[in-house]
Image: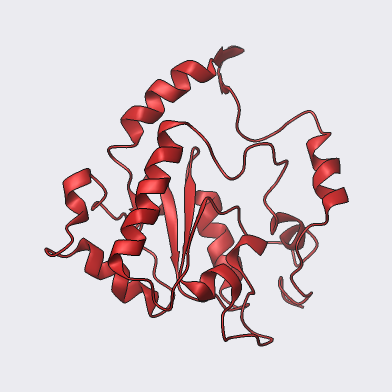
Length: 202
């Protein structure tokens, strides 16, 4: 019995409300060792610095990844704004660009890579397949990556042009400056409950 045998579902409003009633939430002031809390205002100053060195995870699932590579080329040159350092390790990345459709078989790996990115982190869903499944309304494709992980910015298109991805990254930059995350106020990410009820990890 696999981890993703049960059908994926979006959490209901009642489940989200129950999660918000818990004491511990993601986001908010940063807790340091010794019980010291970093105020939100200082976190925003740090976010301003982070916004000029956003390193996305080098992670392409389907054909949208070609447009993502084009953005890194000399014509569009995302290096001008400090975003060209796509990291091959999630532990060195600041966020994730989910480029293309995600299959049910790949879903646990996407969640694992997301959880290995250190906080704070941001997610951009690139392409209509990552946003909603697009034409792949089938049993083996996840109908929207936001049913697995929190998404900050959606970039529609099939495939979206590099300029559209660039606009999405600028929107991510604004969220980094404001220290806003898609997981703010959530107890856990949507797919974690599915993983917990599945087969235990080795």
